[in-house]
Length: 202
Image 1 (cartoon, rainbow, N blue to C red):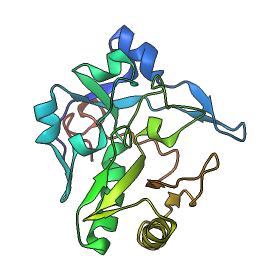
Image 2 (cartoon, rainbow, N blue to C red; image 1 turned 135 degrees about the horizontal axis):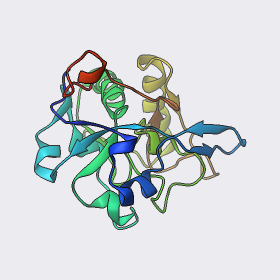
Image 3 (cartoon, rainbow, N blue to C red; image 1 turned 180 degrees about the vertical axis):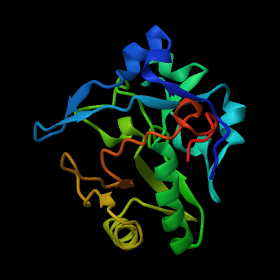
């Protein structure tokens, strides 16, 4: 699917945004392994544009970029810059949505959040735009072991390579949502200067 949003490389980001997004820098995960942050972004000029930009048949961009005041100020203002891999996340969630056959609700701060977000500890896959925290499926709230493990099993079965947090209250677990991610994935789409359409992100 072609996404009609401008592609912005790290060197073209405004300075105050670059300081928050830290493109190309390394963040360590809980085990101490370093991962390189994304360097290619989609520019989103307004919330209305995010609402009107589909990334998959059942997901629009706004569903994956909702944050609160814990996000760094430059990453809350428009234009906003979102890692291109959010397109791949939406595609993965679409597979899950088709399997469950009903609405999939992503929590605020449960999609993309910048490295400057107060919840961005260690190398969170949310900083890559490749993780989603789902708090509700249809009319079912995911606040019990039974429901979380039920839908976790579906996610593991239908999304190739997906990682799902186990149920629990320990660090790295979840007891009030379903965390699905597709790892430290960096998506570098072909742009006009590379022989493609600069507006194409996927």
